Length: 237
Image 1: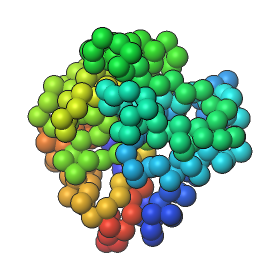
Image 2: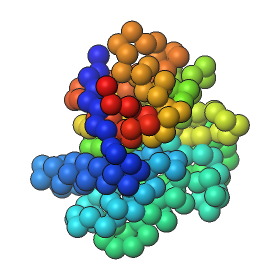
Image 3: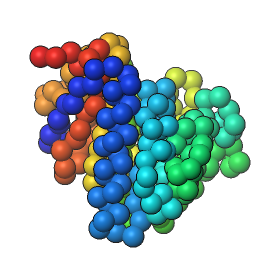
Image 4: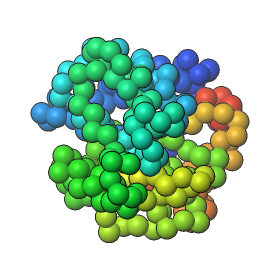
C-alpha cells in the first residue's frame, strides 16, 4: 500500500517552484549515484510553469533523459501535443535544452497501437530494469481519478504485461505508460491544482478507495509518494 505526503503550496507560482526544486533535487540525487538519469513528465497546463523553471536549473542536463508519461496521438506540432509543450518550456533554452528528449512516436506510425509498442520498446531499451525504472515520475490527477492516460472504465489501467499501451479518453487515442512502470519509479510526484481536484485527491489517499474507480491508486511505488497540491486542491486541515 502506497504512503503519501501532501505538501501544500500557497499559489500557482509557489506550486511551480516547489515542483521544479523537487524534480531538480531528485535529478541531482540520481546523478550522484548513476551516469544517467531518466525522468518522465506529465502533460497538461498545471506543470508548464514548473517546467520553465526547471529548465533554468543548473544541472548536468546532458546526462538526463526526458520522457513523457503519456501523449495524445497527434502530430508533434499539434496544439494539444505534450511534446510541443515540453519543447516550449523545459527544452526551450539552455541549460534545459541540453537534455535528451525521447518523444513518444505518434502519427509517423500506422496507428496508436503501433506507437504504444514502439514507445514501450524505447523505454525498455533506455531505462534499466523490468519493469523499466525511472528516477522521477511526475504525474497529474484528473477529476475522474485518472493519471497518465489510465482512465476509469477503460482497458488501459488493467494492462500489466507490457510497458506502454493505448489509453482512450476524452475522445482521443493516447499512448501511456502502464501501471507497473509508474509503480517502479524511484520517486513518484503528483502535481495537483484546482478545487475541481479535491474529491479525486481525497479518493487517491483513501486506503479503502477502489483503483477501478480511481486508477491513480494503481501507482504503488516502494517509496513515499509526494503530492504537491495548491490550497484549492488540498485545503489546510
